Length: 281
Image (cartoon, rainbow, N blue to C red; front, side, top):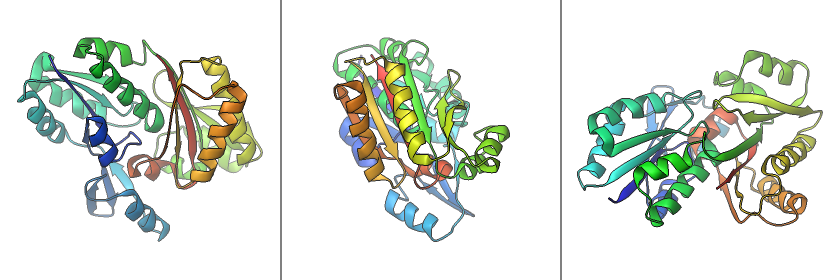
């Protein structure tokens, strides 16, 4: 049975990149006041960046169960099975909406909580596509990409912890550590898919180096690791991290993807944020 991979706009892939990869995207909503826009459909990165720079306040809202149900129905009607990968259930209600929608399709749809966002969710989606091409069934793909069965790591840093704090996706004590004490934090996705501190320094530059060191330790110099580097309007910093990682690993990753985050993620991290993520198939 053919398998289609579906995800939300929590990945770093824009709509064109997703289409080329064969991934169907159910967008998260980007909200400027009462205006509600579908990420990647009604608003792109450049427009989002311009509006945020102008001082507009932005929020995000997950797609509804009805949104997911409509997207899934089109695929299931073709006869395909679906593996649906969502933003971490610890950070978004996307998983809840997707799981509710999936009930309408029985065993035709399998929902996987990525326990992640951004680069890590991107890696899971792209690895799922590779397994589709290899001929795996939906059940096999869901098992192989499940974070409980796959070796994964993710670290990131934000210049302004208060932006992330306002999203409610990080504990208040962590926000206080970063803002009141003036330290720059290395953050990670923990095993449950929540954000937790993983280190600190007195400068953002040093924090990014600590982040790379943490990743090298996490993947243990694996020659089979897939790596994603995500950034919010910081392409040079992302390029620098890529070079630093290759140097510290002693070789480039077998696969590496460098992307600017989608508005879905950028809205909650703020300009200048950067992250490095890996899976070891």
